[in-house]
Length: 604
Image (cartoon, rainbow, N blue to C red):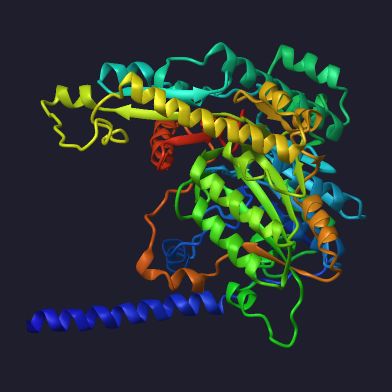
C-alpha cells in the first residue's frame, strides 16, 4: 500500500509538471509577424476542409513536446479570409505556393479547391504576385499551381496528367462465398449505392452516370488549365493524346510551366523579389498557419455585454450523415446539427443561417432531423441559405429542401434523389463456425432488424413499402421546395446524380456560386449592415482540447501524399468498413452516395 501511495503521488506530480510544460508551450508560443516585403507561404500540404477541423489532445501534446507539426487541416473560410487580408496587408509582397494536398475524409473537394483558386484570382487583381514551385504535383495540386503568375518546376520533377478515374471495391462475391447474406430494397433506377454489397461490378446505369460525371469534370479541369496557362485547349488535348507524362523540359515547351528551377535557385529568386531575413539569410516570409486569424473560441462565445452585434450563423454539415450525435468531419449526427440550429433559432442575435453542405448523405432519420429544425427556424423568420460544397447528394440534398436559396459550384455533385434499405444477415457465415441462433419472440417479425436470419418475402414487401413512402416524401419535398411538378421530379430523380451545371438547368438549385456568394445573399436577406459570422462547429483552440482530457478520441494517422496500390486497396476496404459503421439509421433506410470521396476522380 505504501508503494502504491508513493507511486500515485509521484505520478500526479509528474503529470502536473508535464501539463504545466504543455500549457506554457502553448500559451507562450507567439506567432511570427510579417515584416515589410514578406511572402505569404501557401503550403498545399494540408487537408482543405469545409468545416473547422478538430484539435485533439494527442496532437497538441506531440507538438508541445517534440515541436513537430503534422500536415495541418485548414477550412476554406479561414484560408479565403487570409488571402483577402493579404490583399490589403502592406507588408505582404506576394504569395508563394508550394507542396501538395493531403486529402483526408471529405477534404480537398473539387469545389472547395476552385473556391480557393477564386480567392487567388481576386488576390491577383492587386499589384502583388503569386509564385509557385513544385516537383511532382498531383493533378489536383496542379489545378492550383496553374493560376500562378510565375510557375517554377524542379528539374527532377514530373507532371502527370493522366485523366480521372473512380474505383470501387465490390464485395458481392466475397459475401456470398463466406455466407454473408444481403437483402436489398430500393427505389430509383440509378440508385447504385447497394451495388458494392451485392455485385462484382458497376451496373450499366451506374457506370453511365459516373462516366458522365468524370467526363464533365475532366472537361472542366482542362478548360481551367487552358485558361490559366493561356494554352489552346485543342493543343492541350492533342498533347495528352500522345503522352500523359511531362518531364520539365516538355512542360516548359508546352507552356505548362514558366521556368525550370532548382530549389536553391527558387529561394534565391524569392530573396531577390522580397527582403532578406537577417537571421536566416533567406527571404522573409510568414506561413499560412501563422497568418490565419484563429481567435479563442471562448472569446467568441462570450461577447462583451456592452457591444452586441447581429450574428450570421454559418453551420457546417461535412461527412456522412448518421442518426444521433457526433461531428468529426467524417460523419456528422443529425441530432447534433439539429440541436445547433435549434439553439441558433432561440437566440435573437442571429439574423440568418448559412448552411454549408459537403456530404454524400446517409441516414434518412438524421437528414430529416436537420431539415425539420431548419424548417422551424425559417418559419420563425430566420432566412436560410444553402451553400453546396463538393458534394450535396441524397441526404445532403434532402437537408436543403426548405431554404430561401441554394448555391452550388458548377462541379458540385448533387441530386441522387433515391432511397434504399439494406438488410444484411450472417446466418450462413455463423454456420461455417458451427454457431447457431435461437430466438423466442411474440411476433414472427420481432427480430426483423437483427442480422441472424434472412428476411421473408412478406417482410421484404413491408420494408419495400416503407422505402417507397420515404421516396415519395423525398419527391414531394423536392417538388414543393423547387416548385417543380412531381412527375417531372420523378423523371430526374431515380437516384441519378447530377453536376451543379446540370442541376441549375433542371431547377434543382437556384444559382452557381460558392460560400462567399451564399454568405452575401444571407446578409442581404437578413437586412443588417454590420454583423459577426459565427461558425458551427467553432474552431477549437488548445485549451478547448485539454478540457476534454477525459474524452480523448482514438489517435488517427494523418494522410500521406502518395500511397502504394496495395495500401490504397487496404485503405479502401477500411473505408468500406467505416461506411458500414455509419449506416446506423434506426429503420435501416438510407439516402447516400457511397462511392463519392473528397477527391472524386483524382488519385489519393
